[in-house]
Length: 265
Image (cartoon, rainbow, N blue to C red):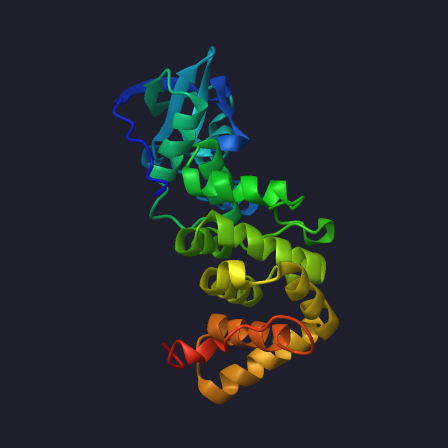
């Protein structure tokens, strides 16, 4: 499963569209940035205005790229004025999201915004990561007070590297051991490495129980000490610490992390 985007072969035409005939679909756009919009409005020059990309469907022109430019133009020109746009016709919501991602590939974007637009575009990796999280009763988002997971780049990287099974098992283990406090980059990466390597040899109830007993602070401190002493990557240091905690006391044991891989590899 590669998550390769679909190619949109329909071409656009240049045409005039009234600003008040445009709509914003938040499922196919990044979150509106009022500060950036105000900056554009303060420097607005209609002769240098970038073209807005819109899709004509259901009687409206849905903005696929240029929502901040549209807002700035409305402040400067008024909402009843026309501006030149790249006009597409009949794209689906999924295709709108895919085109947004293509048009903004080289722009700095909030990772979460890009993640949610990718879901709307039905990209396989992001959609399956979201499905896995939801199946575990977890929510991906930016609100830490609600226990939402924000590190989407870590999740999609783990999915691509280890696959859906190890990612699901890793998130379930972290959830059971530490609840939402455990969903941090190093912990997710380290647990995923252990699950990917040892798989069915792991007693996951034992793993969650022993991580809980040791505590999240002890895991972080041990990983930091290993990194300071070895210079190994953070993820491997967490993997080593997870196995050490798993092997403490009674129960099945796993081979030490660096028995199989050179330090720093």
